[in-house]
Length: 79
Image 1: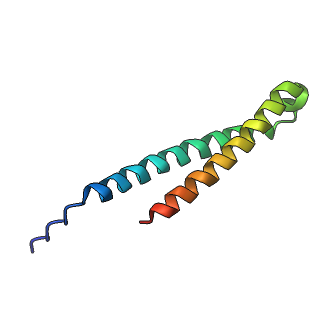
Image 2 (image 1 turned 180 degrees about the horizontal axis):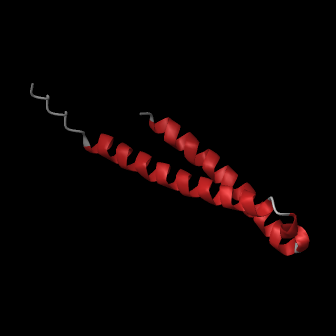
């Protein structure tokens, strides 16, 4: 049996697919960085230097906000 050819995507659809792929990559990278920060923060020794942990907490909060924004944009693009 022959498979039917895939319909050609319009430029708009290709752009949406490209943007979704880009967003997925950025979300994956952000989630990996969050996981790494959380791993570091699980070590009590991490909190010995207030400047280090305060910067890490600020970065974590920034990443969480960015990831939420990226997910919202990703969802708005639909499947």
